[in-house]
Amino acid sequence: MLPMTVVETPILREVRGNHRSTAGVHLVARDYPKGLRIDPHLHREAQLIYAAKGTMQVTTPGGRWLVPPDRAVWVPAGLEHAIDLLADIEMRTLYFDLPWLKREQQYEGLTKEFVVRVSPLLHQAILALFDAGNTEARTELLVRLVMLELHQAEDSTTFVPLPREVRCRRAAMIVLDDPTGLHDIDTLAREVGTSARTLSRLFSTETQLSFKSWCQRARIAAAIQRLSTDANVSVKQLATQLGYASVPAFSAAFRQVTGRTPTEFAGK
Image (cartoon, rainbow, N blue to C red; front, top):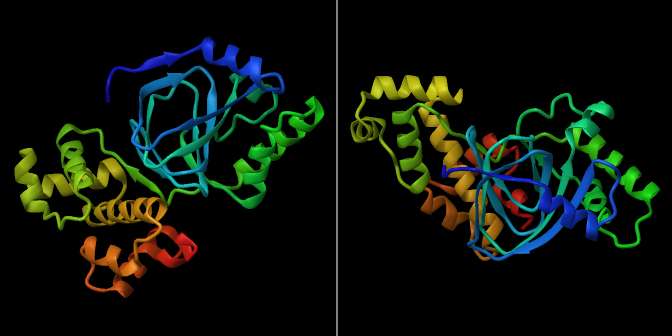
């Protein structure tokens, strides 16, 4: 990652000038074009990042999170992160001051990043927070509803953990740069200057996944990205491009990671 930037009060002044919010909760609505990258930065506030439309990719030191429109990502205060916009985005972000979270006893479990499966109720609650005519009482009620939904909606299916050890991370990035390739661990180990046995052990230790399982997670993340950004791609095309022997084999792998078939995920 590039050197990080601490994003401070100018954003909050802008938010307070444009949106009603309860004390300690600030709202930002912004649209971004496909292809834009928001370089590594951090906030003094915790944030819930949601794309009401479009797909983004959020990268933290711990991994890469694919965030299609039915997901949101929780980013704790002080955590470096970068955002890549994979489609035109309608971003809706909620910023939470830490004193507010602690005072409201909402801080437990929110110290690490995670992806949230956005239910229809959570979707509507987030969008309703940006209604120009909100009263303070309505906003406060909506924020509490968001927090209730947030605590029961964690979902790791679109997460690809990134190893920190230098050789292992290099190997991981080679795979992520070409997730459709059939990467052999012996060849990959030689490319990064280690043995296959050491690389296998590193993947297991650093990501809590075997090399094979990690590569499958990377391929499924690539599939989710295509399904989220290309309405015309077929499941058969994806299976072929990602190196699966058949559509049933691809669907089984996809279900193993996400709990749904590719067709169910895409809503086709």
